[in-house]
Length: 267
Picture 1 (tube, one colour):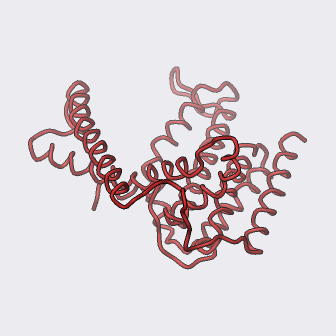
Picture 2 (cartoon, one colour; picture 1 turned 120 degrees about the vertical axis):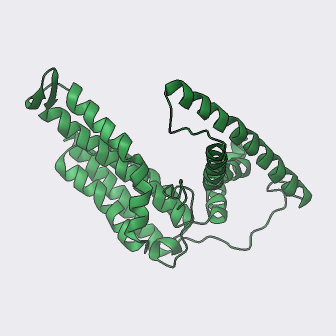
Picture 3 (tube, rainbow, N blue to C red; picture 1 turned 135 degrees about the horizontal axis):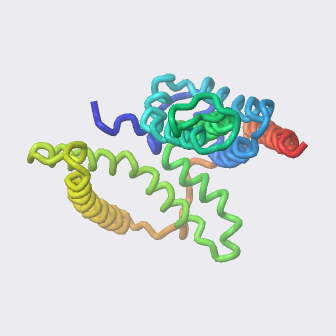
């Protein structure tokens, strides 16, 4: 199994679910609404309402649950560290104590809220990239940024750069794995040895990875130039986006939930 096979961000999962068929512009607009809702959630009602849209999207996407688990698995260490820091450093009623270390009730609850928020943010971002092809993502971003062209904002170029960067995440991870295996075959490893040896091995990993990224970017630029790429000048599209009733309903419900969660926080 690939060392970085658990990283699902930037990977597209083919399917014909409701989320796959939604207008990509609606999905891009829905993502910040969900993020705002998750970050504003404070009380029990707010956390439940912010989690319902993500849970429904996970069920409707038609993607195996194991895929979500593999996507979150590499981040469990970060979530547990955040939970431990909040529990051990935040003052409050003591739930457990061992010597100088003590876990407070308030700190534990705060850490659980932080882990809950991060999990929802990661899952919602995964859903966007796993149910939208890179080409549709680029076209949708460009459409949404189109009004900013009147102010000199290069909408097409920005959308292209963001999508290329997201698309090359799996490619860079595969290249990093190849370099690590080559180093291990020569007796080096970033996971063994003392701290100094690991730092040296990490530098030896980053240098060829950076060189490979520059080479790949140069090859991509040459390929685009050879095919006559000139930005959006005179460019037409085979597929035209059109909002459907389901897109309007989803955005309307998310806006309403965001308002309710905000009202619950400041009520």
